[in-house]
Image (cartoon, rainbow, N blue to C red; front, side):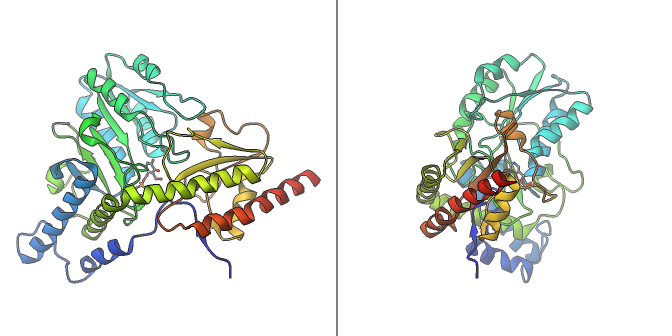
Length: 385
Ligand SMILES: Cc1ncc(COP(=O)(O)O)c(C=O)c1O
């Protein structure tokens, strides 16, 4: 039977067994509504508040700054639309970047249709943001800068501290989509000048369907959902208690194991990357070689098609991706790599390998054993046809 090797942890991660165990009672005997004042509600409410503390502890923020949402897409929408609504009397200009996730770019596009002006900044060939370009883009009407912490496709880490300083110096709100950074690298929230930070449970071994928006004290954000007074009037709707508990546990696990796990995973990633580059000609690294998440490597394989390579990797039991997970299952060309000037012209397969806690040295060795042969075979076949 084919051994399965999962190298797509930026798309999603396996739920940590400890998170699952923590969640289980909230699908059965712990069924209360956290807003109820009787015993059933109180027990559940205290679990929600414990999870809030666990999230806050990983981020380094106050528990009162954590707002639970259904996913990072909701967090991003709430941050961007909520700030636009709260601050539009001060201005109507938003700055973002070309390499953001669609969960940032699409709300910005929506606001553009509503009359806001959006400047989308280019990145360089390593996917890095130019701070001078950011400064030049800011006008008196700028109310929000939305820039990600680390890119989901290349792992490139933006100069978040400098972006925050620039925005803070001009009284502009800074939203940071930190979905791929949380649990992988330390965030330095206190010194960061980030006003709003988005995170997602399923990217750090928590469950799917739960996220959070960290809202710095004093930051005005209009709610996206109107209804009950949950989450201190910031996000209406009965809480996803099991999801919240699972996210809290995942944050606790990340906090205690991040330093050692990141080093272990980075060593595996480096071995994989160096092994591929040493054994397969015509391979190029996409993204910043150093300012990069420890688990991510994005490579261009020249003279190979992405779908053929991914299909053959899948046949060999290896799950990788050609960029962000696409809901249709189709392989689309990546807007991130296009923004970096990668991949137009000759056939080229841009493949992201994103490692995680489930990966071992054996996984890397097995990929290095089969990948050169697959690439060679695909190149030979395309040369014949
Ligand atoms: C950078 C980034 N932002 C936002 C999201 C959306 O997260 P969610 O699946 O929780 O909506 C993702 C998921 O791929 C992501 O990688």
